[in-house]
Amino acid sequence: MKPINTGLALRPIGLALVFLVGTAGCGQNASPSDPVEGRTLLLAALEAWKGGEKPETLTSQDPPLHVADGDWMSGLRLVNFRAAEEGRLIGTDVNYDVVLEMKNPRGKSIRRDAVYAVTTHPQRLVLRQDSL
Image (cartoon, rainbow, N blue to C red; front, side):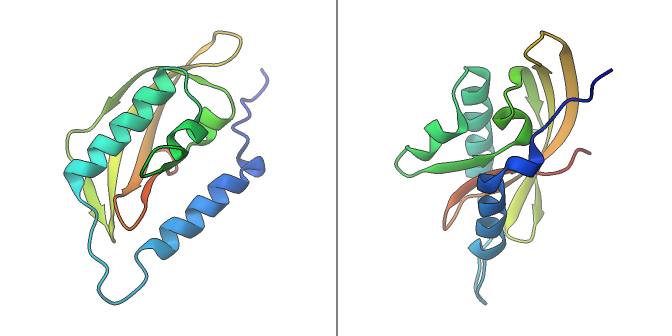
């Protein structure tokens, strides 16, 4: 069985987002992200993926929403998802547990448990973390 390529090695945008997330809260008075807005951003990103949009489409919004998800960027199709109602504040980000149901280009179903870190300010970021 051939392993699924998540394309993590070819993710310069992902590295840029990691940098942005890491520096977004720099400063002594960094305030935490808003959990309600964070969940709204997460759902918007996941619905866009489910609807067949590319992550770059969200970047063109005003204000932009930057999204990094290796499975999305490598071409897996999101069929369904279940996002936790409540997030966990980690530093200045809010983390949400999400169950993803995807299909690869050959139509094979894939289910993954994931964690998304969401930043609501100063930039809007949705960054997929390692699986649970």
